[in-house]
Length: 250
Ligand code: PGA
Image 1 (cartoon, rainbow, N blue to C red):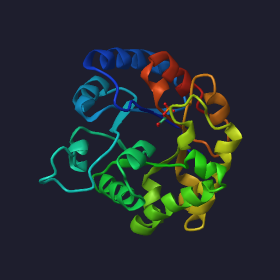
Image 2 (spheres, rainbow, N blue to C red):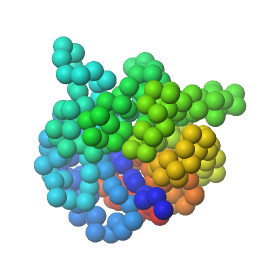
Image 3 (tube, rainbow, N blue to C red):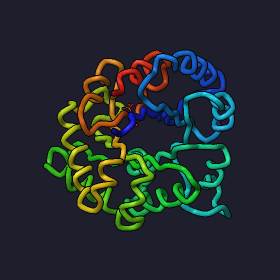
């Protein structure tokens, strides 16, 4: 049995005050969360605050991005060991906003997965197709290409220590989630692709769904056999809504 995982991706949102309030709300409600492991990914600058507020709680934390380079002359970048210094458990890698707005290639994303693991953390590798790719029947081709880049560079065993997030780009921030069946189909496809290299890794790897998950649709999505939890954007910014989603985990 894979444990469910629900991770909040706060994106570029929050302030010292709003984060304090959100985390107090989450900590108070965690007693009700029986099944899911829970994590939050704030912007880099709030990692110190988040790690202090969450130390000793059931909630883990992580970052939304990382440099693929070792420390050095890379103005504005953050190295993996720095994230380890703040006891991050997870690092989101290859989010579609990074791929589309900042031009991150499949190869760069694979390198980032490797540096995250080398620093002792777990990458949350995001994959997913654009609307025009889905409409052109290319969903599986795109997801396979994104996944294969990581398997080719880092080996399939690297996925034993990773989380995968399937996030159809057309569902992110649009309010229009994939149906539970659409998501399940792609999750099953991802697991099957990994199984071609290693049945053991395919069975173990947690595959999260992301894209307009809300309190009202989480239960139906999480009920699907290959959906092991969620990567939550907008709905992770409200404590009650995020807790409702966490409670829906199987
Ligand atoms: P959303 O974002 O829940 O706001 O659609 C999900 C994500 O981008 O990870």
